[in-house]
Picture 1 (tube, helix red, strand yellow):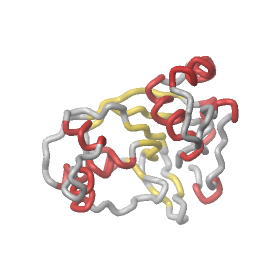
Picture 2 (cartoon, helix red, strand yellow):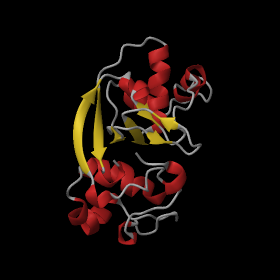
Picture 3 (tube, rainbow, N blue to C red):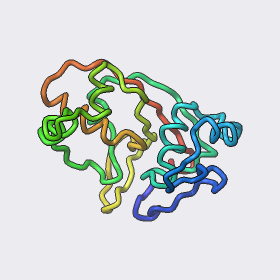
Picture 4 (tube, rainbow, N blue to C red):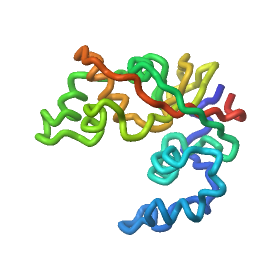
Length: 185
């Protein structure tokens, strides 16, 4: 079981993986980045690498996960599992389905967010990414979170999905990448 209080916000990923220009207005495109780094990351699906490591780099709440040892499998989950079986960096943070629906659906802003558009079509454009946590984990507040998985990437999508479930919308099963990091078990 890992303890997020001990891990902190340290990025353990090799510096050579940082996208050129990250943090600037001109970031190298994924194709160029993948050409440089794909060989070192061939043990992971390219879509996962693009959505998580390349896109979020060390700003990811999960940049403490050693990527060299990761294994990954793709699964199909009932939509509700993303709310009931997955904890976040803040543990079992309370969700506000009414607020989230109004924000993501565009009721508040007049424009539906990309997250909502993708799920409204039936499937997300990228699978959510979770890390196996068979013994749970300790969140950043020190609480032991007894969930089977830790949410690596897809926090906004999880919030919108929860909002739709509270509105009793019929949702398709969703694809998820399940990571396993032996050193964190």
